[in-house]
Image (cartoon, rainbow, N blue to C red; front, side, top):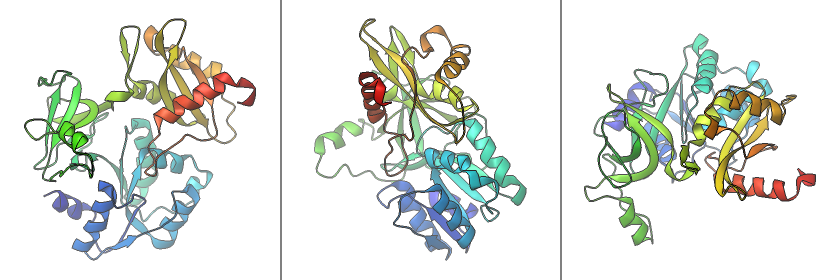
Length: 329
């Protein structure tokens, strides 16, 4: 059924493009989908590069594309996005991490004149795709659950939560997760007694059955007794003119003995944005416990995985180094 949904919308005899490796669900799925329709699967051995991506879309007239959030954001910030011919794109799937509404709005505004649109997708390599807004979009939501996919929301003790209540997302789909190779302990801990996969993501389901993603469980930190979600602050910062990318993380304030929010930002070319401007804008829109007490830092690029996910642990290491050697920042 999952493949039926994909083929209904994207599997026509045209070109599919995806930078995901085959050991990720997005890479594996986009390899299989063209087989159902005779579509061309465009493959590159090079890592993602905005210029190369735009050139490939123009040259091969790619129609169906998957991009991690960070790659999509980099694409939209590239100077040539204003002149590139992207008229072939009809279906641009986004995922891998939280997708800001502001980013989707800009992408849809770019693609809509030639009949294209974006789609928000949620899933995992363990369970495949679980939700997407391929038919109906709702602001802030990933979308309704896909056929044969099940999601539970549970608290820290494993108790099931109700509509609108935030907790860890547990998923169960038609993809049979056989475990992690060579790691039986991790395989056992990943599945609950009912066969649901523990995603490590925090979210909720609304009264219409739409799924919302808040953040990674391990990324949420406490400032004193208050929980701080990095994605909440990142969404605000991404709306600031001149910001290309941002990662918010909790860093230890040794004097206060608690974690405080810090923002690491990649500015757009020619931006004159400074730290005081960012702090002023953010602090004016959030509760006191979410203020950027850990500071604002500017870097040339953020550390990422091969699939474009920001490595928050390395971002924290970057902040530590910058604090230890401010003369080298």
